[in-house]
Amino acid sequence: MQDDYDFVIIGTGMGGGTLAYALRHSGARLLLIERGDYLPQEPENWSPTAVFDQKRYKPAELWQDAGGGEPFQPGVHYFVGGNTKVYGAALPRFRRQDFAALEHEGGTSPAWPITYDDLEPYYAQAERIYWVHGQAGLDPVEPPRSGPFPFPPVPHEPYIEALAGQLRRQGLQPFPYPMGLDLRAGGRCIRCKTCDGFPCQVLAKADADVCCVRPALESPDVELWTRTLAHRLLTDSTGRRVVGLEAERNGERLTVRADRFIVSCGAVNSAALLLRSANSRHPNGLANSSDQVGRHYMVHNNTAMMAVKPLQRNLTVFQKTLAINDYYFKGPDWPYPLGNIQLLGKLQAGMLTAAQPLVPRPVLQAMANRSVDWWLMSEDLPDPDNRLLLSSDGSLRVRWQPNNRVAHQKLVEAARQMMRRARYPFVFTQPMGIETNSHQCGTLRFGLDPASSVLDPFCRAYDLENLYVVDSSFFPSSAAMNPALTIAAQALRVADHLTNKPQEAWSNDSKTQSVAP
Image (cartoon, rainbow, N blue to C red; front, side, top):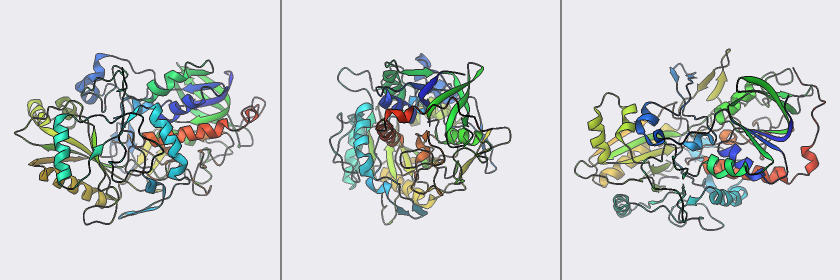
């Protein structure tokens, strides 16, 4: 048995890391738990072969495609900072309309229990914490802002600036994509070609580790345990309060007690933890009286696009600076939303080799030298049958049947025509499957009705007094935007909610309460 804490936060990614940062001066005693360790700063951080081909930083685990497919290696990373250690640092806000019910060709994207205005001040705060560079007034569907971006946009390199001009002549409105990088005065970013999808060797990416966890640990009230795997949450005999966490730390089983528990393990692993925590009071899993735990799993409809101009080399080093939202709410000759188009980090042969192992490396390098590379993202809609399941042996099974595919195909075709009009004769596309789940969300959605949602608008579980979930699990819809900044903004909002409560609310002594079997 370990000492009691005011808060235990399980997971140190965008949700858990940001929440720890926000609570660091609250006076509460806080324990952060991370199943991994710090990601090492080493030459392999910037090696396409090590990162993509050898998968050096991915865990050696497989999830099962419950739809009858093969096991797959998921796009998750277990380090301090979670998936933000390798994310592309794209930090856009969701649109105002994304928080309301929105009609798609494939169905209705449901309304959130909060509005954009509820989250706007926290978006602004998160942008400051995560060094977001951008420029207001150029994105054709951007939501209203209470102030400018904290930092100016990341400048386009000449090749991308020329391409932006070509797109504007087509009547499109390309804009600088909001990015979290240390390009502040005296900042560490060197604008290399190994950012998007790579760990940052110089710690210049605005990830949860660098921006939140390390500053939080400067407080004497904050403690971090690495290499600690959370197994199950324990409730008292009434089933209304969580009183402990069973975990394994460096091979040793232990129980941690706290007044409040915050789960921030990512959409799949957070849902799995609650399902593993079933007991006599919660026979179908913790916080699951609604039968919604693990359901409504979403990951976006994603396609990578590579446009090649054989007679012109693309000398761009840092390519991920531009995006297009002209088709976000409706397409050309199409009344429904299509989605977002954004540049990828510059593709290199070592990155392509993992996806195209039969193509000779020199051919791939020649293509990469002459390509401009895009990520096409459309909303997938919540479906209760798209869900996480636990096998009898505890292994993870994911059922995901893509939907809203007509809209995504129209987005792909619009992007293809856009690049052909820009005089790129060869356009290659690669749709992403179940293994591309870096934008996973929705498995513990929040809402106003306990019968159809797991969490309330402040991410507290309806079935328990002191259990919160703060990661992309709470999303009722996926929108068509990178989710990281929205997770961070909600974490800051939850922190305000927690600290506005009287100190006595953190101090309900759970040590003498019996535990449900």
